[in-house]
Image (tube, rainbow, N blue to C red):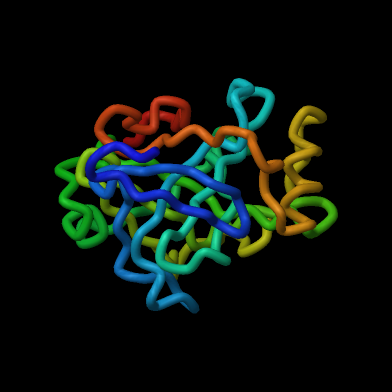
Length: 189
């Protein structure tokens, strides 16, 4: 049974979860998905980020749409995409350190690849996000990465487009209480 102000979501990619409307991340749409505006950021399972660095960004406006996402610094500690002042302003962020940068992962490829040319930039406190297209950056659209052995099961479930098994609990990372605590991003300059 859901609590007041919670919505029950039966997502076709990540299974069932409950989320408060106030915990959803709001995007102005993503390239290719203009009507995808409200997302929940969910941990795939309860393993630590060092063993399972991927999370789900699950759209509640389109129950077939979910992206595997990760902190790109887990794979490349030097990754530091340039973010424009207008990007930060649009997210109501006062400083670069106010935002978390995530990369969309293509786990269906072998090896898995990260989109470093268009990272997701999220201001968790304001619940706002944007996909920043890095026009002048030399970052690859599909950077191959070596997955930790413990993460390979996540890759398999993503390839099948089934997400976590039914009955498993995905942990909500967004929202005032979560504040993305399990997504550890390097300090931004």
